Length: 176
Image 1 (tube, rainbow, N blue to C red):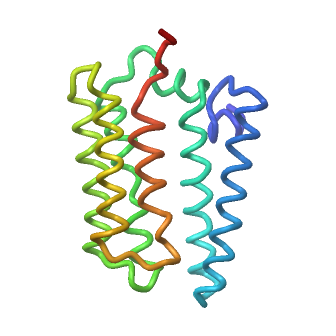
Image 2: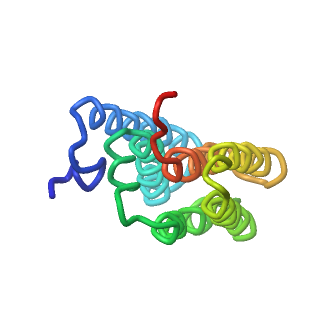
């Protein structure tokens, strides 16, 4: 497997790879600037930037046809999809490195992602898309209006939810 096969998906087109890498690099660059302006130490900025690379790139990559084919290929189950969501422990990484990003906030964001993914995967197929969108918008409301998230990381939860609930969990839908 090539690096692009691992980071994007096997058989990703040049355009899909370009979109994914471009989003990852641009998002990481912008968050790098945010981190530097927030006067974070170098190691904190570096970790925040790596998380941004994964989030911005992943939100775009998971929406590609190649990723949809890969993650929703025959034999993939709800357990695989829930496992993919569960391994995204970045909220806890941010709690470790971003001052003011608390453990309760990290737990709330993580629980929102995992419980929302559970709701999507157990729903009847015709309801999965609207449930994914509903849980995403309410998760964004929670993370931007109810939880206290430092400005340097205010982008994180909305993009995490888009990446996991909308881009990853929803298979490609045939045109009707």
